[in-house]
Image (tube, rainbow, N blue to C red; front, side, top):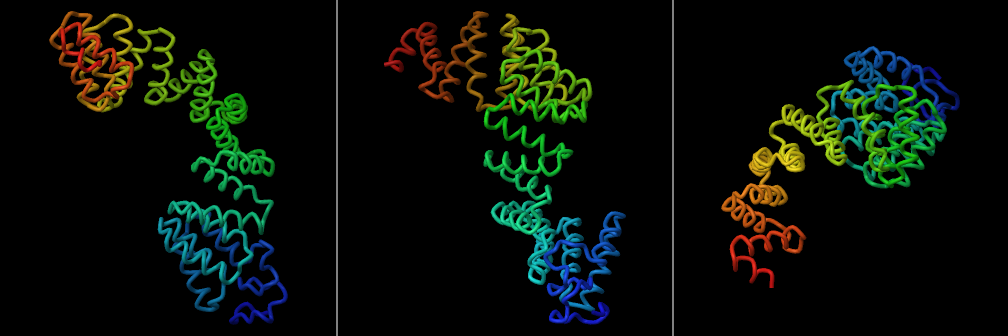
Length: 360
């Protein structure tokens, strides 16, 4: 058929590159000449030329599904996912068996947080092109992000089977295994990524956390040390490493890391709270009280900060401050918690009669 003329679908028994649903290439996922030209423009970043070419093609042939598709790609690149959906849908209406159309529309749905339709479209793409690993990987990530971990593991495993060099699928499958508390197999996936990219900080962070969950603290520390070496201002790695030091009784190291975290984000209450715990553990009670006070100023809902501050005040015989802080703690704490019971007991000692009736 002459592709310069308006397409007559009934006459399109052979591939003619016009992009309509009657072409011999429809449903075969073969790329038309028009799509090849659009892909070249896309890879060179010439989206304005793509849009001009798509509009021209649609003026010549309103049934050109590829023109709608690539116009949708241009809209998606510009962040206009609603328009992209409209164009991808127009492409699908004209060629309902082209896997790429569903794949890209699925991604547009995902960007708009329409999870149900994203999964449906990736599934359709898989139906029409079961050998394309990308759709399994994309659907697997959606399942992962929505806590459907078994489905995520299945899809990401299939993506790896089809494309063993896709390190992203290993990383995400490791996350799914971690979410299932399957830390050993998660580590195996993170190892696969790190064998290829030994300085991939995301994989190091994730493996470090998995090691920590297994009680392998030295291995965990080694990973976080590597991340901090690579990214000295990675506040998450610094804070987690500090927590490991705290759990190991390495209070000076914990204080140093929490101090660095505070320098990087002085508005975050958490490192003040945990540095306060490290100070208290090494019996630097004045410093601990100062940190718990700052943590309370930044986050007044942290009931344990009040409790810990009151304990330190009591140790230093700052009795009036301890009493006031225990009372503030009780106004915020779960009354059934062990800390609440302890606070009432201490108030009964510090202020005779204060806690007795409340304990009954």
